[in-house]
Image (cartoon, rainbow, N blue to C red; front, side, top):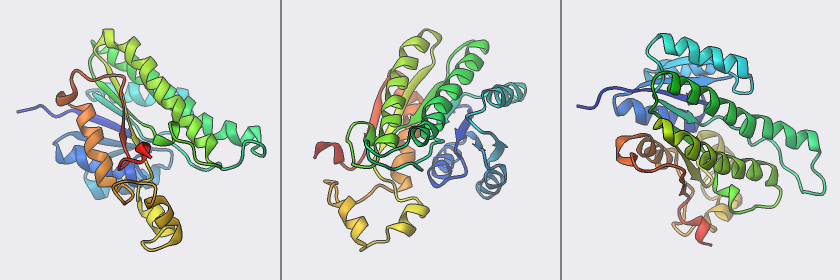
Length: 245
């Protein structure tokens, strides 16, 4: 019987974070939802039967303190870097540098910070463990107006490879899952079935429909688990074939 692991999921209060948490809980793992909205994380954790902590991934000191506290209660075996924002849109000729910087601060610097503090935590514990970053196929396939977000996710893919090659000596595997658009409750409310926007996105996907959260979570669980023991530095597209078009 596989022993229970401790999984830390950033952005855990959101739809994708909760879906990933549910999958790990079903696998028997202790799961901790981290989110800058501590109340939302606590509510989600209570509903799922998980645990919660308030954490802003852009605050390096807070991230170090959080991992230090978790080390006292057994430590963390798997980090899922799910926290990210898609709040900035604009053409390359129009986007303000400060707006661009705001998305990089969360999606790139925040992800880097969590990789660093988790890696130090695992090395101090003797090595081993896994990181799964949530990237996006947008890092490889541009959409007009979404370049700030997409370039931040291209950086996440590059960071995944960087961390993977350096942390392999400590037996820490680092991979990413790169979804296309995912039908979280928020996205589904904004793009209901039959809407022009939903049909426009679906027409780009060979399998004919946007991903659901339940399509993403199994890929994360796989890359974090023993079945992926010889996989590191990979960004796995879960996109219904959109990158083929």
